[in-house]
Image 1: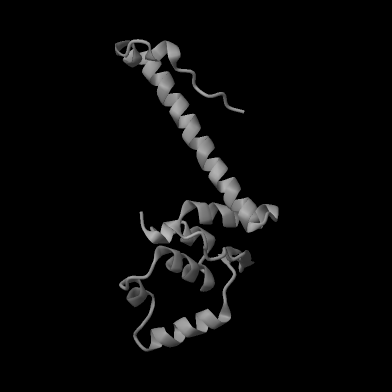
Image 2: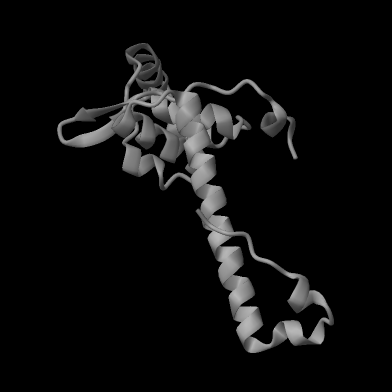
Length: 144
């Protein structure tokens, strides 16, 4: 695990705004002007992509230049947690911390449901029959 993932300090999530019918991260005009200036001189998004910048910095840049929310969801480096949290913040007015926590809760609920389904399939297929004592002792968690 990289130190980037262990760093408790994260870049903030930019708010989402509607621009001409498209939900976008709120653009920082200074950052956009700097990118436009550097792009004209041969250092644009492709050159940035080729450099060794952290994913956290890439995510923040995508937000600061006003990337669309849908488009950000297709970027390989853009974490689901940030994408979902930004949408939750926009729709519910939650704080960033509340929205990030809600996103993580949603991910846990999905994993829990998949695990319960896998155990049901294994139980129905008899796969747990080969493991003495395991079938009778396993109790899937209850979902609320």
